[in-house]
Amino acid sequence: MSGNPVPIRKNYLDNIRSVTIVFVVIYHVAYIFNSAGVISNIPVKGIQAIDSICYFFYPWFMCLLFLVAGISARYSLQTRSAKQFAQERAQKLIVPFWGGAFLLGWLNGWVTAHYVDMFGGNVVPGFVRYLVYCMNIGPLWFLLELFIISMILLFIRKIDRKDRLWTLAGKANLPFLILLVLPVWGSSFLLNTPVITVFRNGIYWLMFLLGYYVFSHDIVLEKIKKYAIPFLIIAVALGCVEVWYFFGQNYTSDACLQHPFTNLYLWMMILAILGCAQRWFSFSNSFTKYLKKRSFAVYVCHYPLLIMAAYFITAYSKLPMPTVYLILLPLTFAASILFYEIISRIPVIRYLLFGMRK
Image (cartoon, rainbow, N blue to C red; front, side, top):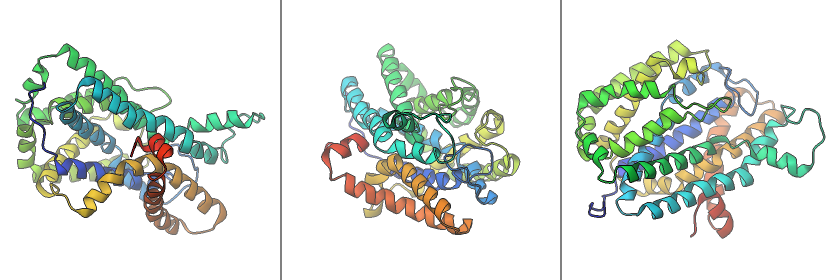
């Protein structure tokens, strides 16, 4: 594959990634106070109407991140060997996964311990408590999951040395792209881990591979771009129905995530975003560059900062919940960016948290 041309950076993919991480932060502010029965680190009930944000975002935003990561992996492997790609993935994913768990993840566990007796009333050494707290990894699961499927991709590439799968996928027409909703739905039943329900391996791995093999073709993306507006109208309409139909239920349950309607909604939304981003977000300016550079750091560090702020605000103040939401959302973004600006100047810590050497 060394003869492949160097890919031109697609600004709309960077913008999709950055904006989706903004959605992740908004989702987590709503999620920690949810009334839908989804376990969070802080068992404080918020405004139930705010839960609609969770129902709207949760089915698709992580699927979208995996799909965009798959597209990016294709472009990356056009200019890197498999060994270089694996080394880079380890530095950018595995190092921040462990660094984030041990440097920041313990904060999630510390807050949780204020509400849940994690040790059954037993007195345990401080170091053991710290290790248990670190197991509360929060959104860092995404880094581990992405690393695993990246390594699986390298194995698939070894089998398909002549790149036949990618060439075949480039022939996909619009009806085929829409009908991909069927394997997407089927994948929602596969390789889901018990207890730790965020590891929905089947659907996330499929999204990554679809990104790599199907949506890394410019000709395929052009077909979606052509019908971006109809896709957007359909996706928003389905999203409204999704919120209405499942509202009050656990939106992370199999009953919701394996429902055919939910999978139709998430797939239409992904197609809509890919199409619309090509039309209206294929640009770069000082703001998008600023956000792109910091989006990964925001993803890694926002949750512990959010949890800490939410704990102190709800435990030590009597502010009404609307005010709590209004404080936490901008505070989380500001604290995450400020945290990045500080940590990015500390060599060892910035490497452990963000995989940054310089």
